[in-house]
Image (cartoon, rainbow, N blue to C red; front, side):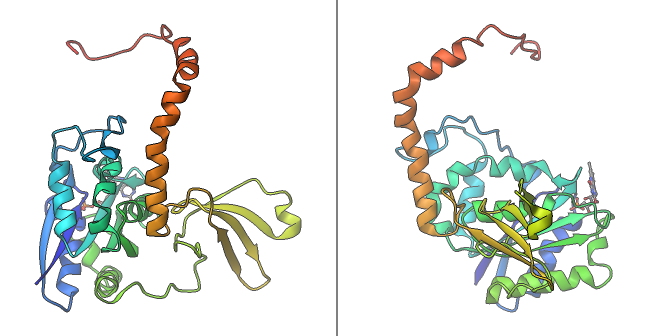
Length: 291
Ligand SMILES: Cc1cc2nc3c(=O)[nH]c(=O)nc-3n(C[C@H](O)[C@H](O)[C@H](O)COP(=O)(O)O)c2cc1C
């Protein structure tokens, strides 16, 4: 029997995120055991930016519930992530886990290529904001094989499975987990490198005259163009210096680059200190008492 790990980024018991994951599990054709983690109830502390997890035993210095999540992610055969929209973004429990993402590098062998899907849930149609982008980024940055991410709507607990769109999305994601990502529909312009569908418009020399708009893919960070060819919009993107993470080699190269920053820091330490020292006594820190 295979194991599907569901990461529920909602505090609400029997809420839409939880039941949507359970519905995906029901739609799977094979024999799957479902394990669930409710992210908001875990003790996942903020990253300390100490970079210790990139060296030696590659272990975070903090003693909290991160190892529990990592162990479950490593053991699972596939992953599903569900995040409710809170103020136009994914519930912070998902970002809180993603902020500890440097710890995922130590598990690249187990995580790379692991089938994973996600769902962004919003209470009001059209008010999902950047929740899907956070879920897309999460799936990519945990080094998994991103096989699909859907936006579904429903405010009241259980509402996402009323009507036909939610159940259809669950069936689609279950199929993607077992059979591989679907060929993307041609109606939505996507990044040809990573499949991302969220872009930032960049200043372009003559967007009106040329019909070409410079863009950056917000999922893999590759730059490119959005071009109107008279009948449809076409996206072209090219691999940049820091592609995130199109291949396993990119990921290892990025890890090496991060590790190399330690030597660079040592080399430039005096120069950097001279900059920061000048700001040492500026401002008054406001902190709770007794800290
Ligand atoms: C604090 C808070 C903020 C919310 N912000 C949004 C929002 O910006 N856009 C939206 O469509 N729904 C918003 N919602 C509604 C939830 O996304 C919606 O009810 C969702 O189904 C909750 O999923 P859950 O049942 O898994 O917790 C918000 C809910 C809460 C509690």
